Length: 334
Image (cartoon, rainbow, N blue to C red; front, side):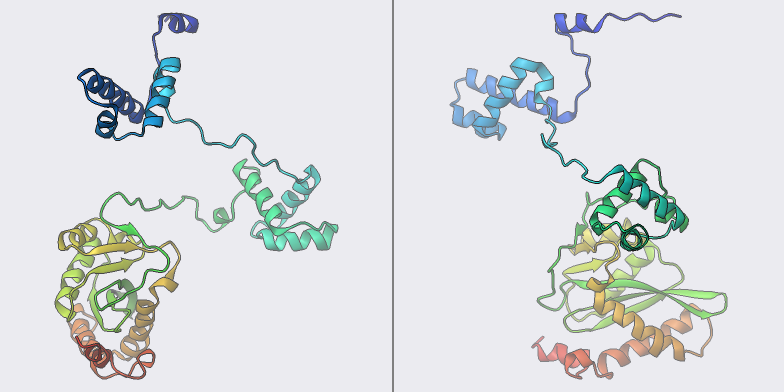
């Protein structure tokens, strides 16, 4: 069957618009229609603009563009600069960089910049080499380093459209219960037997609670959240975690129900979770390295609870001027 359509100029002459627009275009059209309706009913311009929540200059601009170009005029315009940066490197430099990268596929821009100077007497900046490599990888002339490490699929970044929020640089605990650092640790107890320990540390007082589980899932993390709310002597107001899947779904939903703010750290930033990371190291070397009990979850939990009590009430802490976390917490007047 042969399909026939009218020519494109026919649609322009008759005013028919066959384009597809985003929801924001129709939302703006409805606001303009509401503005006109309010004006007809005798509302002042100020009242009409307050009703549609649009500045006067923006409203006039939308009306002018809609009159001139129809719905297309209400769409967001491109923010691309009129003048974009043009590459300054030569084709020769690009060829040499491509040659070196093919010869040494795991070398980055720093090493390649050194080889350019040493092997070909080409003195260029590291940033220029990086831009050339980025261009060659985007054109698929070269393979990214991640390909050779077996990381073919790109990990999806977490979207913040629910309760969790991005952690911002400079966020610190001001009182006990703020910015509780939570993480999980994988420990091999015996050959073929591995547990997952969830740890929560108050960065201000260093008071810590922890629990062992067989799997690190969102359900286990939620169970640990209820456990830490019972163990800590203060109310938990906010929590910071890494981007692991165990801290999504049910865990995030439970934090919302309890009114606990949840902050997610940037990728590959363990330094911002330093208190709990250090606590994980203490558990690994001072607790599990000395464990000689049975490899079952119940026995491990009993042993872990004794160690947790020892850590909070007996073990001196260097960052607390050799007080125990419990002594320091009491010194705050809690």
